[in-house]
Amino acid sequence: MTAKGFDIAIIGGGVIGLTLARALCDRGAKLAVFDAGADVPQATRAAAGMLAPSFEYGEEFGGPAEAVYHLGARSLAMWADYAAALEQETGVFVDYRSDGALGLSYRDEQTAALAEQAAQVKRLGGDVEMISGDEARELEPALSADIAAALHAPKDTQVDPRRVMAALKVSLNRRGVEIIQGRVLSLGDGETIRQFVTAEGDIYEANRKVLATGAVGGLTSRGLVYPVKGEATAIASESVITRVLRAPGAYLCPKAEGRLVIGATEEIGPFDHHSVSPAAVAGLRANAARAVPALGMAAELERWAGLRPGTPDGAPIMGQDKNGRYLALGHYRNGVLHAPAAAEAMAALILGETPAFDLAPFSISRFSSGRDG
Figure 1 (cartoon, rainbow, N blue to C red):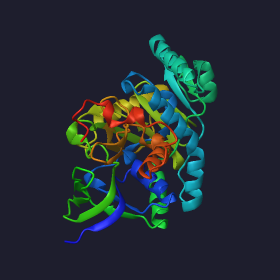
Figure 2: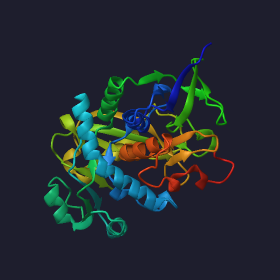
Figure 3: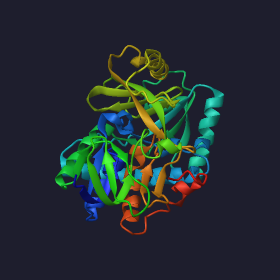
């Protein structure tokens, strides 16, 4: 069988892979994207689309915690123009909203944790403040009287990930980028090995290979990227709240057409993204209704589960491995947030340019030797 060849092959059809493909196209690169589809579920399709770096700094990110925050903040600053350009180019509405976010507390210890978060984010240059429960209710009148305080992040935003994905595919189609439906089974090791094979038995060649795979591909077998299952639901809620709310035990994201997303559970390890626990959904809804009582009787529109790509320190893996492959994966719950900035930096690296920010904190070399493929 004759192998079909490309200059650059991006393995992964989620938001990271597609934004990177678009960035490379804008720099004149010739490439193809390989999308495993339902065989490897995208975290993007299950995400809520919160663009909220103000809530993404903490111990779970280990050593790269500050780098993760700055990556998110840089990308957040890009999203307004990115969303507008994507909509103008494709005609696809991506539901970008710049109403800010509130992190809610009921008890003193929750308030103290939010105050510590606010202090750290301010130290890193973020625009956040602690406000009282009454001040939070002035912003969102539907909030429960039990809300004691809130972390207000006025510049955090959100998009609808499903709409973003649709727009990216239209954009790439107009640019002539081939999106090949097929799961890549073998990439081969070594800089001189160009061929790889899909589950369908098709053979391809690429001068440069990029792993933008999700939770069940790429470096999974080496234990560096692993699945973290999340369950969520959407309910019918027209104009009850106007911004993202992060309440204890649930986040609430209002979307277009009266749809409100409530999420999300976290369970490390299971590959099952088909089943959704009724108890998990009931818990999410109860936690949401505690924060916003008017949501208690709202009709459910859908429920789903997805697999986030976790890493040992919670931070993404970006750069090159010792076999010459480019890595753009492991963004955990922040793939949508990170996408524009990650694409900008990785496109520069792949094309031999200097990235706009230092990728060293995200290098695979930060993990123990011998596990970097």
